[in-house]
Amino acid sequence: MLPDDRPRPSEATDFPPSGPNSLASIGERGVARAIDVLLELIPLAILVASYVRVDGDEVKIDDVPFWLSFVTIGVAVVYETIFIAWRGQTLGKMLLGVRVARLIGGTKPDPSQAGLRALVPGSAWAVPILGFGLYLFVFLSAIGNPLRRGIHDRAAGSVVVRTR
Image: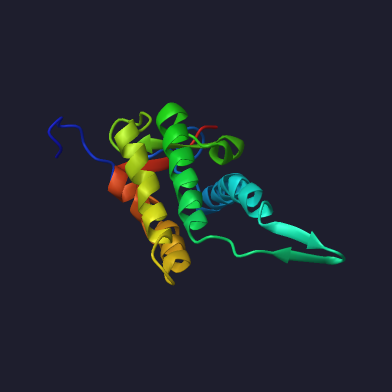
């Protein structure tokens, strides 16, 4: 038990089978993540476009600086942290009707929990060569978990539930 003596949900049956506050499916979470990644990549696309030049009929991309990848990770971490701490949902989660909730109590995560939840996949992405695979592993680890909690959810004490 935690210091506040509230029981910790540990099985899917601790949540409603459907409707609000039921566990979000892996598919819902995946589509919401895909939408968020597309939104997070917009600043990167704008920055990379500044390295594109047209030389006659040929389009060339000059050397894109390595630091740009860290800017992209930073944008993603800030986006996730702000939206999860503010609303409990990113734009992708809003569209899919899911939200991030504290495992204990069901309220939205506080800024430190939201930040930790965003930093786990962000730091995985930052690992050279293995980053993409580790990033996927963080999210796909929810598949084998009874509460569909990925490594980032377990680190932050959160769970993803439906809003409708």
